[in-house]
Amino acid sequence: MNIIAVIPARMGSSRYPGKPLALIYNVPLVGHVAFRTAMSKSLSGTYVATCDEIIENYCKSVELPCVMTGDHHVRCTTRTAEALLKIEAAAGKKADIVVMVQGDEPMVTPAMIDAAVAPMIDDPSVNVVNLMAEMETVAEFEDPNEVKVVVDRHMNALYFSREPVPSRKKGSDRVPMRKQVCVIPFRRDYLLRFNEMEESPLEIYESVDMMRILEYGEKLRMVSTSVRTFSVDTPEDLAHVVRLMEGDDLRKHYR
Image (cartoon, rainbow, N blue to C red; front, side):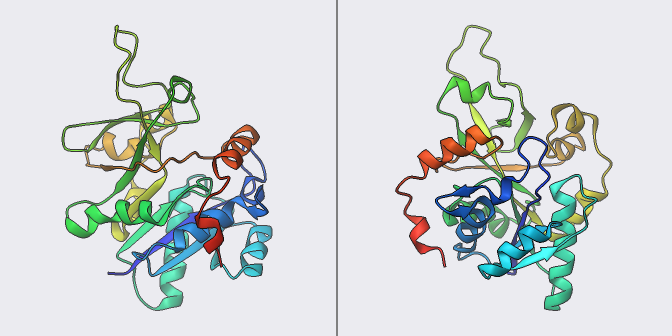
């Protein structure tokens, strides 16, 4: 099975401009994501997708495959799809699964990639998967930068929100506190179909792309990961991740 990873990254983040090249132990954020993702034995290739020459130049300097895309993309999924088609054209063969790994997840591990694609390898009916992790603090649960998810008994997503869901206001302090981790495998054709779907109201209200799938009445499989991860949305997040990654074992295996 031909499984590739695409890491969309751009310098123009509204909350943290220049984020992809922010340094963590002298390696840019996007470099951490790409090096760690590429360690997954499930993948036949890992590519950074960007519209910024400065990111492309960094990738060339460390021999990370990079695909230049248009600068018109608003969603990571459309940038990923453009990169996918260019990768396929260059390789002369189609991918079966494309794993979209957000460029602000520097603590991603190869085991997370393997876990995310496993349901799709085992079950042809699964078209898209998201990883999710337990949150350890109420402060993280209430942080609007963290996307919360609620699941059904079959581990399919019921709802995503930047608000703390399920509610803790009805007398229970022990609600499931789960967050989306942006390692998202799509079946190749499903990614292209997803981008053709009209944006849905709840997707816009919540500012969460995955709500489009649920609002169209389709299934989205969630997979738990016990790996402690933290995404970078602000300079404060970056400082926090630097502390968390002190002594990280994977860094010594970067090529």
